[in-house]
Length: 155
Image (tube, rainbow, N blue to C red):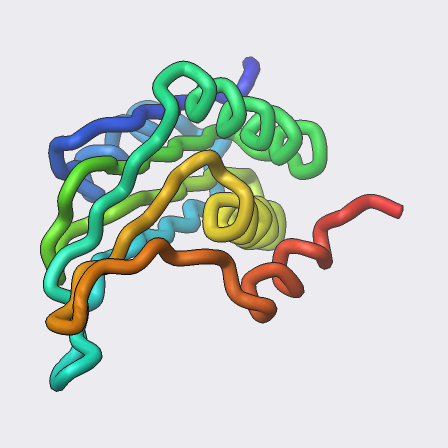
């Protein structure tokens, strides 16, 4: 059985439990599920984020995410994979994205989820603007994000 893969870019929210149930329902080959959900943070005080706007290039973004999903499937023995990423204007506390990996064993599920999260954080074709009281600014990957993604580079 090939591993089912779901990739969706959408403006609407998602239900983490429903997505997990959809991936695992009726499956006896899954021994581990790792689920990561990114949530729009707000914070407090002058530096608080009041909103986050995510933009993407339709078609190209899905294709690029699928390329990395296929790499994860080639590197780890996954039995299922779901990636959902929202776009548009999001408010603090709202879900931004989800990576759900399934495998017979936990190590593969954890490693594949980390690999995909590091990619999504640093190189996925999304543009993110944070709105604060002081104005809006486009967000770039940090050195820490780049270092985390670099660990997956094949030598």
